[in-house]
Image (tube, rainbow, N blue to C red; front, side, top):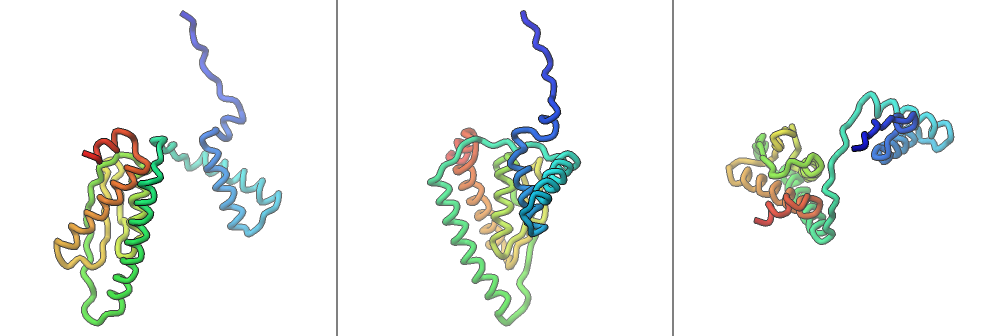
Length: 186
């Protein structure tokens, strides 16, 4: 049986690995936008600063399922845009109407997925819709803690949990693994 020799890491691979290239490009573009200058100096300094930051503040790679369903992506986008516009009017009405300050709640919503990517997108979607904000994420328990506006009764809290579950379901059907899709469709 042939022995495998350990793979050595070359100098360039240690600086930037292939899967880190999108992050490097994004950080360099952000650096150039912050300096409001597209020059060779800002490009080179952006590359150097980005590589240092990628090594000092290491982020583990995000595991993706490798699938994308455009039909459910359109459904997710439509659901998001509808709720965005509807919630904008509701929050504007709450701000302008006479009467007492609306009640708020902190609620925990347990998600079905354990994918960091989908948990993040669900949290971002919820935070972008006016009237709700992610206060904390329990990554290992797949739980989002939300600060929700206008929750005078259990009915509104249940509706918010249902909305989060719908967003999660649409994202799993769009981007989730085959196992998660099967679990959602049951």
